[in-house]
Amino acid sequence: MKTQAAICWGVGQNWSVEEIELDPPREDEVLVRVVASGLCHSDEHILTGDSPFPTPMIGGHEATGIVEEVGSGVRSLMPGDHVVMAFVPSCGRCVPCSTGHQNLCDLGALITHGRQADGTSRHHARGEDLNLMCLVGAFADHTVVGEASCIRIDPSYPMEKAALAGCGAVTGWGSAIHAGAVRPGDRVAVVGCGGIGSAAIQGARLAGAAEIIAIDPVAFKREKAVGFGATATFASMADAFLPVRDLTRGLMCNQVIMAMGVGQGDVMNEALGLTAKMGRVVVTNIHPARERHVTMNLSALTSLEKQVVGSLFGSANPRSDIPKLLDLDARGLFDLSGLITRTYPLAEVNQGYQDLRDGVNVRGLLVTG
Ligand SMILES: NC(=O)c1ccc[n+]([C@@H]2O[C@H](COP(=O)([O-])OP(=O)(O)OC[C@H]3O[C@@H](n4cnc5c(N)ncnc54)[C@H](O)[C@@H]3O)[C@@H](O)[C@H]2O)c1
Ligand SMILES: [Zn+2]
Ligand SMILES: [Zn+2]
Image 1: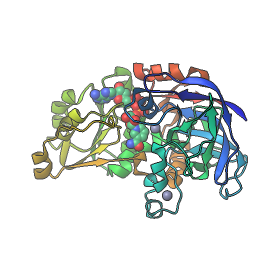
Image 2 (image 1 turned 90 degrees about the horizontal axis):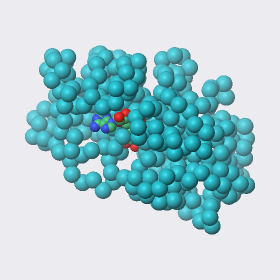
Image 3 (image 1 turned 120 degrees about the vertical axis):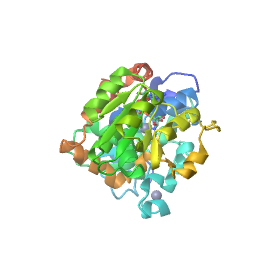
């Protein structure tokens, strides 16, 4: 069939929205009509080359859609099912999946190639096979994805905002509650208050944090952060240091969650400076793949027993945490709608990313279906 998709043909180029040829789903794949797809910063890393994803690549990795056709071996999905497409597939059978770490499913290794396990592609344009961002490729009217990338959700749930559960909302929330293990009374700093950081602030609030310090150079993000639960805001980690020392009576933050648009190795020492004894820096933001240098006072790391941990997909289990987050939203405990500043049709995906660069959205959302 023919459909429309936004393709990055090479580093430094914008998204090209064009007609593509889409093959039918193979054995363990499904054809999905995309409803909505979030504009996460991770797709921007394809354009800048910070993440060396292979082009040509269809963007979009946090999305919802309706299953239209299933492959012969698909057992868990039927045509008509509403699904969240998650940016890490979960097979349920590998060691990480079967030990409660679906975010690290072995199928995740395929993400770097953007192809299904057999190396083939269902998506084609200009005579070339296309790769899929995180095996999803949801900047499109239709896509074909593996069964393992789809989480079925209750059809009563609003499909547009549910798209954010495929990456950003679960990643931020989980960075606080899973990776950061925020406990009631904790003091938390969130550095970078876009889609991920704003969800981390909400996660910290839900976990009972006493202080939530939001740090972002953009005034609009700091205003929104207060609405999500921040108790104090600062434009930079340097500005925050002395006031945080006073606010926390010198104890500093139990968790410092890094959620800047592009991670920077040379700010890690400032993050450690905001961190309490035995506190944890959660590195959720993606650093340029080629970066090798990080500033850190490792003497203080040892003597104050600080920790630096990475977190993928909020260290969450997509099959249980995506429905859980949607339920929290339905109960009014998590605010997914508040994360969405503006919606765009597929044809305006480049405007959406310009708005991300300009800092005017918490999250932009493509609404295709
Ligand atoms: N680990 C994961 O599983 C995972 C998943 C999704 C996204 N990410 C990454 O998380 C990061 C954030 O993504 P996003 O979609 O929220 O991006 P975003 O562009 O929506 O938000 C980034 C925010 O960081 C702020 N910022 C920029 N420089 C800063 C600085 N020096 N100090 C403080 N704040 C600063 C910006 O103003 C912006 O508000 C990206 O690197 C993205 O690739 C990681
Ligand atoms: Zn697995
Ligand atoms: Zn993402």
